[in-house]
Image 1 (cartoon, rainbow, N blue to C red):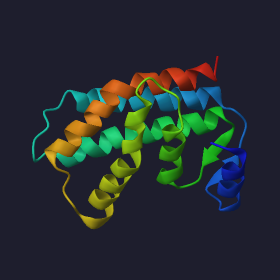
Image 2 (cartoon, rainbow, N blue to C red):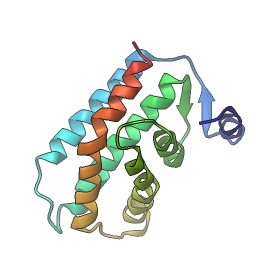
Image 3 (cartoon, rainbow, N blue to C red):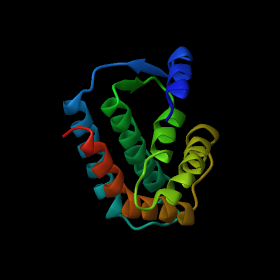
Image 4 (cartoon, rainbow, N blue to C red):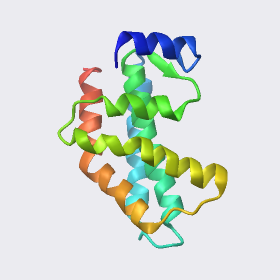
Length: 145
């Protein structure tokens, strides 16, 4: 993400300058892995799809927050900013990160408009986690070592 965009996000109150907090970064990564691990054991059905989608989304969002912390910033209440930083990451399957904003919209529709997530959407976010989660974590950890 370019410096001008970061300055704009700070001015809008969506980011706050902080010190790089390695403990927090590691905690966010661990929490993210644990939640994804738990929902990964569940069968995706019409009844479980919304819950599974939300937990995978939250796991991915936490990685976005961890990435911001690794750059010395705290996200202030904007999932969009958390996801946006991941879209810019250089990972093996970076083309898949283009789905992140759509995942955010699906999650918002489920949380704020009462829409049910379809099993296919939950399968899609699970596949994203399985194919990109560890690559994202590896990139974040590079800035902590």
